[in-house]
Image (cartoon, rainbow, N blue to C red):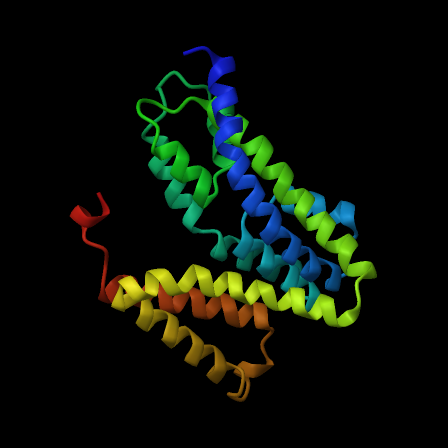
Length: 236
């Protein structure tokens, strides 16, 4: 199949993904605006961090005046699932694929782009991913910029309401898998309880919110993985 046709297929499949990203990124733009970012800064931040949870962690950490190290670690922890996706896609490349293509495909991995890529038969064709990434990343970044611009002139009550929409997004992320898997439901409940406790326990509450998030994420995820690991056959 010619590269031009494959690239256009990637663009086609990336349009609905990008439109969904724009809506989510618009709400994230409100958070970015509260963190003091300009539209251009928001665009650049979104372009280099194609992840809703990771970007939310980034902006809220900036708003809380977290250190560079804290921001880097919490973003790495929140986005760690993309390491697993990269490993899965690495098995689908043609052995002759240059490292530069592997790098850029890995850079553009998101949950949705991973899904459309892994669903295609045969080896990975980087030009397909480039088509999907270009449109999805652009609309994601544009949405953040537009959210920042809107947040600068909309009434305070409207900005507050748009900020709440972000919590709805996270509920939409955690509720479906929690309903299907009791282990995930318990982990989510435990994380809520532990987060609340860490906010009131002496000494621990003195830690920044970013540090508490990093510690809880690593500890809870490790415990769940040790107690109830995913069966290898199920994973396959």
